[in-house]
Image (tube, rainbow, N blue to C red):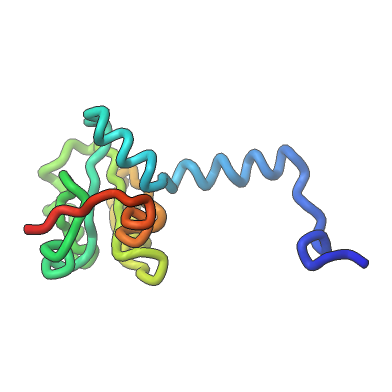
Length: 131
């Protein structure tokens, strides 16, 4: 009997490589963000795209709070046009990071989502700052 897992055959290796490489072009994870920030990386800007109240209750250190609905060309003009933005929201139950990523991409700006958001950050036992 074939299991539910094996019922649909696995992708060929070349298909799997292409799929997972595509995902890494639009996603990063909490551990990579935390390690990069700890090492002093300056090649991306971290955006917390939740509202100011949620941001004040707890956010990743050095994150800028720009709620997704306020991402406009005028607002983002303060950053160099080649800036890579990494966006996050509350977690898997929140689509704010997706909305922010779409807005940034429509502005022609490079963007990745920090998968897991605040929930993922806390799951990794990383600390949040409060304001």
